[in-house]
Length: 243
Image (spheres, rainbow, N blue to C red):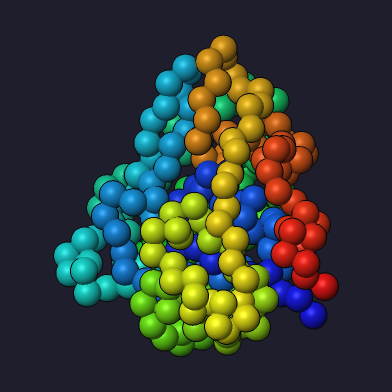
């Protein structure tokens, strides 16, 4: 049976492209044992405020972070970030058509005290996938002991999880060693996500916001919208002649 696999490191309030990548896969690996990167998407993302954008950033304890994997990164709860994030989401989306449908989840999330960044990100990711109706087999890298670095690490994951096709993000082209995948019989696809335009509050449309922006504004249509103009799983199977 053909297996289309993709993976991604933990991301806070992810953008639409991540969910497209997962939606066209059979299996997804939550890559929680790679190195934490400062000023990356692990601990921050953007929401729309009026006709501009703002960052929501989770403060983390960075001492010795170069020797730690993402799953070991602790949140700095001496800073009242949870109240700030919930207030920003509430004030900027309370008039959105679908705010009341999803607001209880976010209010509850920000009432809890989270100790590890990956626990929060994973909890929210699974909820986003459920609400979008994306169903895939789910793995955690920290439980599977993959070996190697960059391209070799991905290839080892593909071999151990039985992948016939692996979906890279667009930046995968910068480091993948395609010939190694060819020798192992693993096809590769580089995602080229085309961002849709959808209804947002106020006049100016801003792309590349967090998935929360799409959910609050578009509700049940969110998955259909984020897939617009992008390759589907059926098309991917046809393109690579997968059975």
